[in-house]
Image (cartoon, rainbow, N blue to C red; front, top):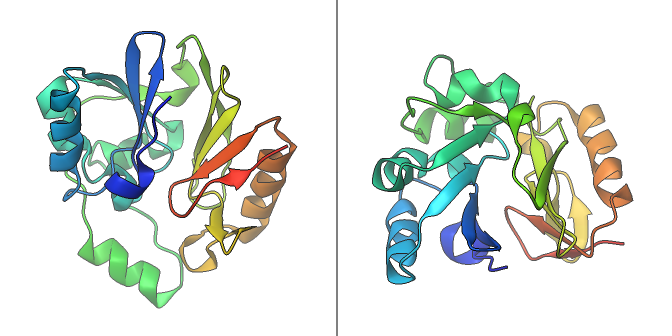
Length: 197
């Protein structure tokens, strides 16, 4: 397994057997680095698994899929945002409203519902709260859980980013689910890895 969240800002390359998967697609600006990386290793991300619809996780999606024709899995109830049919719901926090207006993701033309995910070695777990469809992905072989922004690492502690989380009660329940999962490592979209159980 290879992860590159820090380099690409919310995008991680995962290798299962001989196939490469990309967890999230980073920002628009990071898409060039992601594309260059795959060209350098002479591979393609066969699948892209989106944790949630925020533009720092989907901004690079169009450029990457245009380049590699990857199959994209998206949380079911966030599909319309990724396809450009509806808009992100910002939180009441001023920063969230500002970012939702400032940062945009170009829509893609097709995607697959995450509930139809059927890739050996990786499974999904619904972890809503941060966004309505926030989803985590579990890599069986390494017991690694990719959680997007369901939790963030702040000084070694798992926290919920309240400014950008729509439903705090639901996010707390999802945090509990995350830490009840048998995972050696929990990888947030931002910040350093967290030790699981």
